[in-house]
Amino acid sequence: MAIAPPPIHITGAPFLDWIILAIGAVVALYWLRALRLAREGVSRFLTSVVNAGLVFIVCEVVLSSLFKVDHSRSQGLALCIAFVAFVRWQSFRRSRYIPKATKRAVIARDLPEGGYDPQVHHIDHVWPHSRGGSNTGDNLRVIEKKRNLQKGAKRPGVRDMFFR
Image (cartoon, rainbow, N blue to C red; front, top):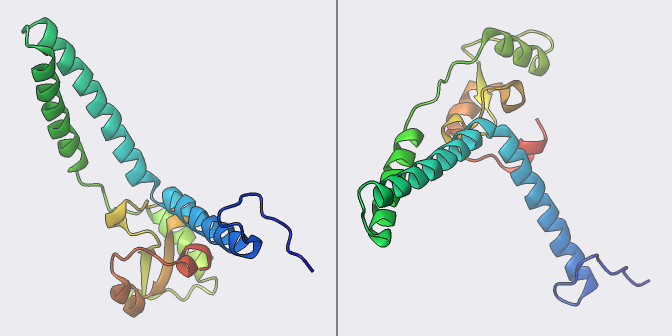
């Protein structure tokens, strides 16, 4: 029985093309989920990029029109100023505070019998907070303290991303 051709042709061998397509789909789903879980970090980064772009444009206009600096020099200065502004905005620390209602909802979801013990369990970020993970219920879970301390701030695997 012949294998139906995949919607895209990469190698010319249908079986190999289907494998590449399946792996690509899993990788795409992983990164889409990562963007969702890290939406606070992604939002902050994109806001900083847009703000730095605006700073660049304003500096370019001010330097070239008011101070009569030549075009190439004003672009270089404006780029330096925008870069410093971007780095400064990215350096602000995000709050690690998790609201009590969110903690309660995560505990009720992950431990329906209500056996939460702070000596045994931790509330963990699926996508680490240090990598932009949000403090929302879909990025939090209750796991054993030992497993959380072993995991650290590592990026989660496919199993951790899709199966709790």
